[in-house]
Each structure stands twice: as C-alpha cells, then as structure tokens.
Length: 160
Image 1: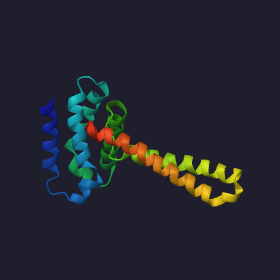
Image 2: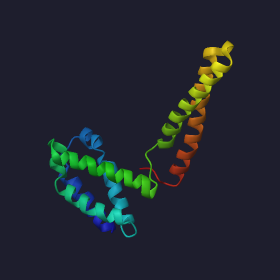
Image 3: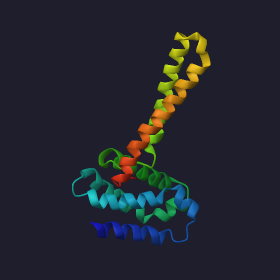
Image 4: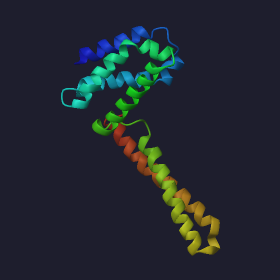
C-alpha cells in the first residue's frame, strides 16, 4: 500500500512541478499528500479510506488543471481535501495544530463571559470588573485545558 501512496504523490509532484508555492499552500496540498499516505495505511481496515482511494486517483490525474484553472475540478479538489481531512479527524483522530486550544479558548471565553455577567448582576458594585474577570478566567482556563490536549496529540504524532 505504501507503493500506491508514493506513486500518487510522485504523480502529483510531477504535475505541479512549476506551480507557485503560494498556490500549493492555498490548496493545502502538503496536507493532502500526508493524508494520501494515511489512506494507504488505514485502507486495509477502513472501508471509507478504500473509497477515498478511487477519489484520490481520479483527482490526481487532473490536479494540475484543478490548481491552475478555476472551475469544477478545483471545487472537486477542495471538496476531496476537506472530506478527507474531516474523515481523518473523526475516524482516525488526527487534528490540526492547536485545534483544542482554539476550541476550548472559544468556549472558555463564552462560559467565562456568562459567569461574569451573572456575577455582575448578583454583585452590582463590581459591575464591569466581574464581567472582565469572568472573560479572562474563562480564556485562561480554555488555553490551559486545550494546550494540554494539544500536547497529548503532538506527543502521539496525531497532527494533521
């Protein structure tokens, strides 16, 4: 199976040899190539990864046109990259860098703001200070909890 992934990535590299680095980053092609290797690794045990193999083979034949010419091929490439990334996150536990840090920080800010607002209503003397303190405490708590989860993901080599 590794041979399949190496063949597809070599084909993609050959077709995109003269492409701009900015285009390659914009279309997340490095992530796409890493996910191709993951498909090869998981395709024996995961039926959805086996289905992705045919999609990847089809888009790799016309990837140069998808990158250089706007149209249906570009939309198909973007759709496949997105679906493949979502599958890797949900089924195989690969995550983007700082995924949990951003997620928990957001929810921590919301929860802290709500708690701060309630404290502001209960203790009117500390009106805006309670709201600001709740926001800050929620943000810091989200950063700490999310950072710990992201550290575990990096330690287990599960970064997208």
